[in-house]
Image 1 (tube, one colour):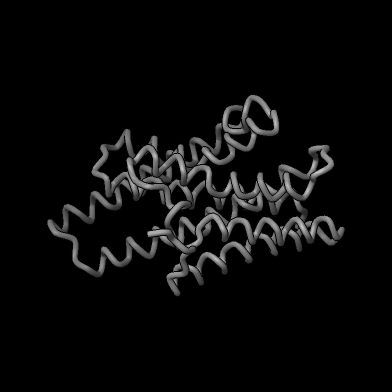
Image 2 (image 1 turned 180 degrees about the vertical axis):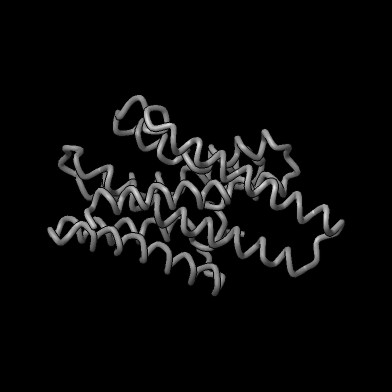
Length: 217
């Protein structure tokens, strides 16, 4: 499989995963179906939008390849209808369903973070700069966390990247790992898998063991 195909898979995976994450947050905030769609699309495309603006790639990908916007919206409506159906069957959702939602939200968010971190690092490959590694890592992190940041601001809650289990640090670890493999001139497919797995594993471990960065209070 070529690196282009790998990146396309990351784009699709990240879009669907983050759309699920955004839609579920919107449902928990009791937004209507329009709000669910908006939050899903913002979460799925926000990081890429920030990345494209930073590197001057205009109009951003979400506008000249709107298929990702439509994919996020379709995912949002599936999530909305699924939860609405379950809620009608159970006036008060059993703890089992709440646990499933929590797990699903966590893993969709983690997969989106890993996929878009890789996508961001890849976007920095063709940008000419003396500080190439720094740019690739920065783009990886902003693409990975940007959508979630906008999601949380729209949902009126403290962004996860500031409080939750070294969230942004997981993206940073994956981005650095991928950038090192790229600079070492190894196979691009190896670099992609390195960045993806490092981000995903680090995020999973942080969530499981409740790792957090130090706080003043």
